[in-house]
Image 1 (cartoon, rainbow, N blue to C red):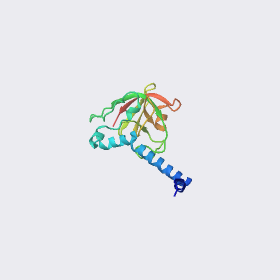
Image 2 (image 1 turned 90 degrees about the vertical axis):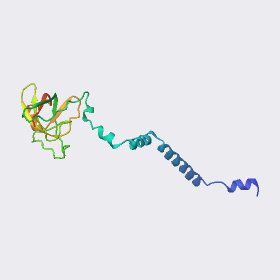
Image 3 (image 1 turned 45 degrees about the vertical axis):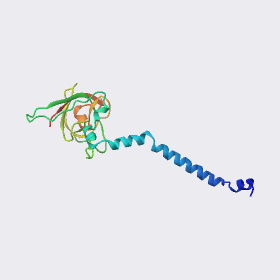
Image 4 (image 1 turned 60 degrees about the vertical axis):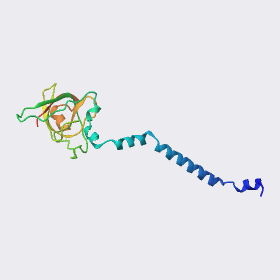
Length: 173
């Protein structure tokens, strides 16, 4: 057999060539994914201990420009302790972070760090009006705001028309 005859019989069909090219591209992309920085980051995370993850608590305050003062439960003397000053707004939602259904007629609030069930006295600094609310949600997620209150609590404070108001928060229970 001549040299010319052998080269003609060894030709690959266009369909087989495209399948071979597709297989090479797939193998190259898989190899590139295995060496990507994301793959290395996941490998680094797998080597860290569970203890290190426990020592870094979730911080909702990272959304705010400055740390939020953490309020503690009042002592047995029954006196209220001041939690913070800032802007309050009101909101409506369908479900809360605590899992209970949102009721616009209840006196409830959303606070970024206080435990669910904490009673807060929210006082409008300009008018002196106050209302006691129960924390059952997380928020607000707007910079500069310290609490979101339910529409009924906003009506009690007289802030529905304003939308936001300057408040003082005191932990009651």
